[in-house]
Amino acid sequence: MLQRQVNASGSGILGLFAVYLFLFSGCATFKTVLTGTIPTPNNNHVQMPGYSFARPPDQGWRLERDDSRDYAILTKRIEPVVWQIRTYKNPVRSDVLVAATAKEIADDFRKLQVVNMTEEGVNKGLYELRDVEMGEEIVGEKKFYTMEHVIFNQELVQKVSTYLYFPQPANNQFFFVALYFEKTPSNANAKSYRQDFLNVLANLTFK
Image (cartoon, rainbow, N blue to C red; front, top):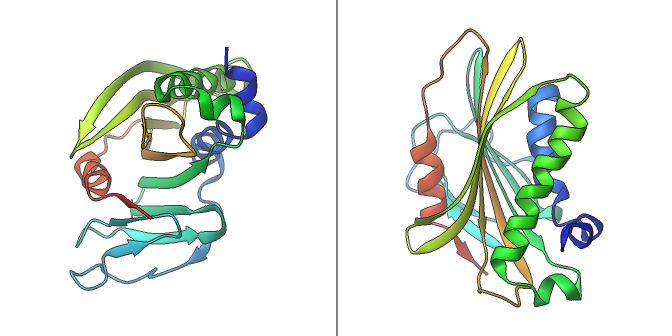
């Protein structure tokens, strides 16, 4: 089993905190780039240290980034609804994990998130975890390992999609994590911008 190595190496930590912190405390603080601007064909290409992508044009998305962690956040708000796309390149620091297959790491990453959300949220009565589904999906020409789930409490509903990309079937030095969130009050419905998220993934390139 890889679960303890994933936890110890940090491979499963950022994704969990991204899900948990967005629901209960909003956005973290990051160095802001292009905030307040409307993306155009001339400024919509985002260059991160380890990867690049085209952010969706003309839809009100605002970009925040932390280059030290290769972490980008796109946020769109139409109060009281918030949508987010989060991306980061996650290094694999353990020799055991490097030797594992992409599917083994992806399975362990997803299972660890479910375990941690159950222990830190469900078992403490903070929220319910619903509709967990794991699978695989081709976006553009890239294969992603996916997980869908819903976090629910009396005030908020958050739909979350997790997409993991591995450059190779095994012997990976890093993998890419992308998350899509729709956060709404429990009595409201949200328009989906999932296609914008998929367009980001389809335009993803690595350095």
